[in-house]
Amino acid sequence: MPMLLTLSVLALAAQPLPRVEALPPPAFEDAEVLAAAQAIFAPLETGDGPALLKLVYPDGRVTASGTLPSGFSGTRSRSWADYAARMKLGAGFVERISNPVVEVDGDVAMVWAPFTITEGGKVLSCGIDHFDMVRESGVWKVMNITFSSRVTGCPGQ
Image (cartoon, rainbow, N blue to C red; front, side):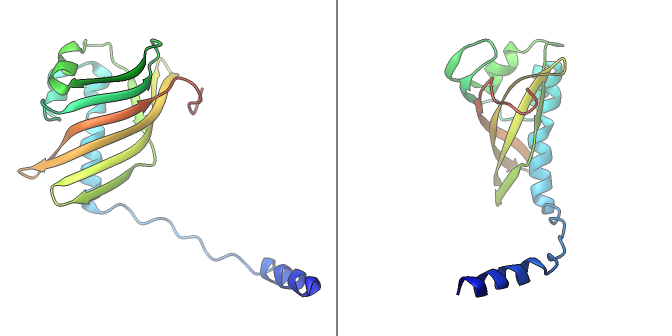
């Protein structure tokens, strides 16, 4: 029996692999949700609080759990309005997400994606972003963002 199993495995291994197909592009609605989530990175990079508030619900929240580059560790949470008021022009950072997962149900959506934050080309931190999105009058906005944060074990460090 072992010889028959070995021959079967060898015969299967000799067969060409099936052709690989590219993943389909995200649904149009998914692309709109993702674009709205990613739009907040521009004002974060420039430190433009008023521009950020145009893309979010000011009463929504920014909540983080984990370690910051400053060394602070724990959970912290602020309203978007409070977060934007503390921003300083030109004092931003570069945040990029990868491999996002988008889920949509009517006018509510969610984006889940790994991120890295860099400054001056150096990776400062990474984690997972979770965006709660709401569509109102045809426009997607970020209601809340919750993210994990760590300063070690990040891609590119």
